[in-house]
Structure formats: C-alpha cells, structure tokens
Amino acid sequence: MAQLLSSSACFDGHVNKYQHTSAVLGCDMRFTAFLPTHAGAGHTRVPAIFFLSGLTCNEDNFISKSGAPMFAAKHGIALICPDTSPRGVKCKDDTATWDFGEGASYYVDATTDEYKQHYQMHTYVADELFHLVTHFLPIDPSRISVMGHSVGGHGALTVGLHHASKFRCISVFAPMSSAPNCPWGVKALTNLLGPDRDLWARYDAAYLVRTYSGPRKMEILVDQGTNDQFLRDQLHTRMLVDAASENAKNVSFSYRLRAGYDHGYFYVASFVGEHVEWHAKRLV
Amino acid sequence: MAQLLSSSACFDGHVNKYQHTSAVLGCDMRFTAFLPTHAGAGHTRVPAIFFLSGLTCNEDNFISKSGAPMFAAKHGIALICPDTSPRGVKCKDDTATWDFGEGASYYVDATTDEYKQHYQMHTYVADELFHLVTHFLPIDPSRISVMGHSVGGHGALTVGLHHASKFRCISVFAPMSSAPNCPWGVKALTNLLGPDRDLWARYDAAYLVRTYSGPRKMEILVDQGTNDQFLRDQLHTRMLVDAASENAKNVSFSYRLRAGYDHGYFYVASFVGEHVEWHAKRLV
Image (tube, rainbow over all chains, first blue to last red; front, side):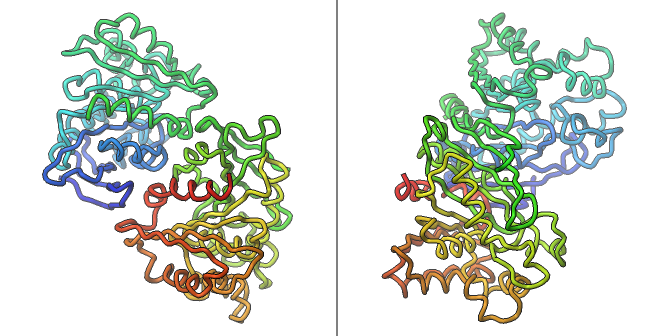
C-alpha cells in the first residue's frame, strides 16, 4: 500500500503524490501519478504510461514540466512517474556526483557489495511499482507502456525490452543509447555491476534492441533533437537506429529527429503530445 | 540592452533567458521570454502577454510549469516573464521570510527608507521592462496585455489598471484581491510604504477595479479554484467580483470558478489555454 501525500485537480483528473516503503530498495520511495477523471469511477481501470526520468530528476520533473497531463487526460490515460533512485540510503559515494547515485541510478539491479542492498531500480520499476500501481490504483495491468527521457530513456528501453509481457510499447526522448558505450554508463555500470563487461549487456539498450526476440514485435519510438548538448558524447542515438535496422523482424522502430531542439524539458514538452497520442493508439 | 543567457527551441519558437542591469531596481535582473517562430522574421513584431508570478517564484516558474508556450505558439503571441523582486540587494529583512522581500516584492514602488532604493517593481515592470522588450525584442508595443497568478495576479491588476494605455487586458489566476485587506499585503505594504494606510490605495487591486475610469473600458478575466488553500485568508477573490459589479461602466469583468482546483500550477496549467485564447482575441 502507498500513502497519499497530496492530490491536486488537473485537467479534470488528479495529480497525486504517493509514498510507500519499498521492500526491493529497502527505503521509502515517492512517485507521482496523473489519474484521468474517469479512473476508478464505476470500477473503471485505465491504461497507463510509466515515465522514467533522467539524471538529477525525481518524481516531480515530468509531471510538472512536460505538459503531458493535458494529453493524458484527453486520451484517458494515467501517468506513473517514479523517482530515479533509492533515497537517503547512504551507499558509497552515492551523493558525491550528480551523474551517479542518488537521482542517477540508471535503472539497474546492482550486484556489487557497495550497492546491491539498495540499488535495485530495474526490479523496483518492473515488478514492485508495477504491482503496486496495478493493485492499489485503478490501472489496467494489460494496457501499460513505458516512456523515458535521457538516462530514463535508456531505462525505458531496458525495462520495456526485458519485460515485454508487461509493457506494450516504448517511446523515448533523447535517450542514452548504450550504457557500456558512454562515460555516464561506464561509470554507473562499473559501480553497480563491477568491472566485468560481460555482465553489462543486460543493461545495454542498443544491444537489447539488436537481440530482442520477445513474445511479440516490440514497437519503439525514438525522438531526438539535433542541438542536444549530450548527443555526441553520451547519447549516440544513432546506435539505436543501427540496432533496430538489424532486428527489423522483432522490432518496429520509428525515429523522429527534431531540428534545432536541445536536451531539456522545453524540447520534451514540444513533442510529448505526439508521444502520448502514439501510446494511446496502442493502449486505448 | 539585455544579455541572452540561454535559448531553447520550444514549439517551433524559442524560450530565451535574458539578464540586464536594471536602473530602476539598482541590480541585475533576469527574465524569460517565449518568442513564437515568426517573431522577428521579416521585421514581424508579435503581441505579448506579460506574466507576473506569485510568492517565492522567479522568471522560470510560469514558463516551465504552466504549459503556456504551446498555446502562445498556436496564437503567435510572445510571453514575457519577469522575476518577482530585486535580487541580492540586501535590504532589511528581505530574505528573512518567504512571504516578503526577495521573491515577494508585491509589484510595489517602495517609499520607506529601508526599501525605496531597490524595491521599485511596479515601475520596473510597467516602464523599464516594457521599454526593454518592446525595443530589444520583436514585440509590438501596441498589443500587450498582462496576466498573473496569486500575488502576481494582484500585481497584474495594479500594473494593468494604472497603465491601461500600455496593457490591453488583464487576466488572473487565484489573485490576491486587495493587499490592504489580507495578512500578506498588510505585511508587505507596511514595510514598503509605511504605516499610513491612505498611501496604500495605489496598490489595492479591488479599490482600483472599483474606481478605474481609464481611457477605455478595461477587460478583466478572473479565475479561481474552489479548493484554493489561500482563498479564505489571503485572496478574498469575491472582493474583485463586488468591486467590478460597482464599476460595470468602466470594467468588463468575467469570473470563472473552477470546482475542486487548488492554488498550484496543476490548476494554472489546466486553464492557461483558455486564458491565452482570451488574450489572443484581444491582441491578435
């Protein structure tokens, strides 16, 4: 069960903030949810989009800054926005830098002694939070998809592809494309999984796109701004395009390039309506 | 002139952040502007809405959290978002509490010795910033209006009614209605103008609505959520309704009550599209 911390009317529905004790992470966690007006009315269960945020974010950024609730309300879809890491758990160096640790867990299940007790965000999102919202909130477990931004885009791809029976489709804004192939990811995976790179493939989104052969064809929408300040050194979005090209049998891939847009929320807000509509066609 | 600090593409236009040295306030000030795609193209000047934010806000809150750029883009209107007070000027007690001083200047021109050197936000917005954006940016000085939220709603009403030749119309979300008649306002006006209440009428929005007799009928749109946590003790929105009823000759007044909505940005975001459309009919 989760405790309701706040509730605000928004586009005829509600933005709610919840807190719960996570058994998987071993700490209290918060998440926000937009619930459209008819969710729960007459036992109505609605579809939902999980949104995974990027570095330094928490459960508030997307719901407050993307403008997505308006589109979710229009299509009758819920939004589920988890935090980006365990909080206050005091693991080694996990508050020392902005690109690793608190607010930057990379949606990985850690195996190293320093982090494995708390940094289990992959299982938290895919199993514990999924179970919580489909049991505690009026959400239809058979109509859920996942969306993400930046490192949260990488998270959406890894979570969605590993759990294709739970997530119907995946869309990402300015994703980090391959954790083992960029400085952010190498730092995180070294900490969370140790130096053996053979163990890293489980959290390599581009590799998973290339090798996916799930129960059904996975639909993936990738969005990228051309003026993104992280594109060249961290995101390498082209790696996803190449990976999808090699696995067209199992992956239905769309790529939308946005001339002049950068990495931030003014970019996300400009196109989130298109993304929610894309999800709605697959969920509603 | 103002220095461009950052620029992000947004809904085919741009969100720009500027910094300039304010002669009126005696400090450096920042503001953000949304400029629609055609602003400046072929010397095109666009209409603009000034947005005045409430307590604790700065130049970022509205542009990041309201969702207004989408609607402004649709109607080809610029948004001008000033900060809410002078910054870093070290006046007496101006950082001691959240409801007065930095981030909470109430859009007043101070006359007391402690504050008059820097706290001149009324003149800053109505004159200095107005002049700056209509000379420095591709904005049509004859098609400008003002919008505000909470204490910034009070500011929009006082600035707009005192400068009716500059601002074509006024819309406000959850406005503080009368500074001399609520705790926030009494504290601020005592500090900024001194204890003589006869001097306070200049910054009493309800009084100005009641007594306005400007060059033309002023159109005012007031929006209010019924679950607003500040409605009973601070906002007293009904005072604006009463004041407008007594001055129907000079004020065209619309009042939109929103059942179940609170004071925050999820409320503002839910109705800002209606407001921008209302301004567009009067500006475009």
